Length: 254
Image 1 (cartoon, rainbow, N blue to C red):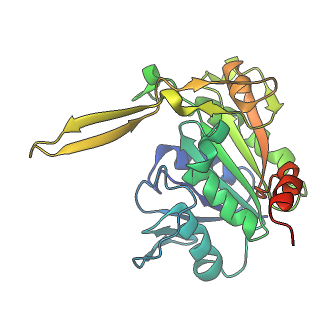
Image 2 (image 1 turned 120 degrees about the vertical axis):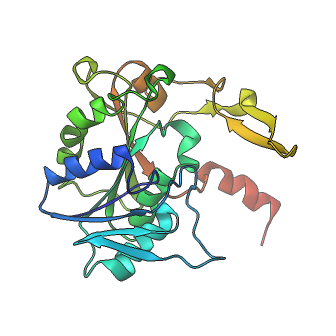
């Protein structure tokens, strides 16, 4: 099986090394095409106003001076001689849960692969603030990554569907298992914007994600992580709200 690896934290990120180790236990045909620098929060953005460059780092190993979406597009069109059977994106340093997936470059790389008709999986490691700078950030992903990916390798994903995986911030032996759950919901009304002043006296703003109230319902990714489980969520790329179609049609009769 041919596997393409990418991420949004950059080709030199610690979580990407974890992803490479997982992939090496799955196949001997591994390709890498990841951002040359961190692109966290890039979402599904595409570089349109500036050129991007493809850099070769060795056999089957490339970086791109652009977004995760750029990486997947260039890998499929330029770097690879034929498409992969599977795309793995991650392992992201931090959660991609609930509606945060809309901001995520990690998830968006998997979205781009899905749009190209390739089975795609996004993997993220949740961490706690007290773990920042520690050596065990990715322990759960390291121990459980292969266990999550292997059952998906020969599965036919539904059309326009990707799989979003999050590992809880726990030692590997404390992870309770794997749950297949729906996407949760965040309440951003209490999110923070931190204002400061730079050394030259100009104001700047830094978006803070702490203090955000979550509203986990039964069987959501937020709840699974809080309960100590790995969350596995199928995400579908059709945003149409079918229930609203009839009401809208009444407003705009032909």
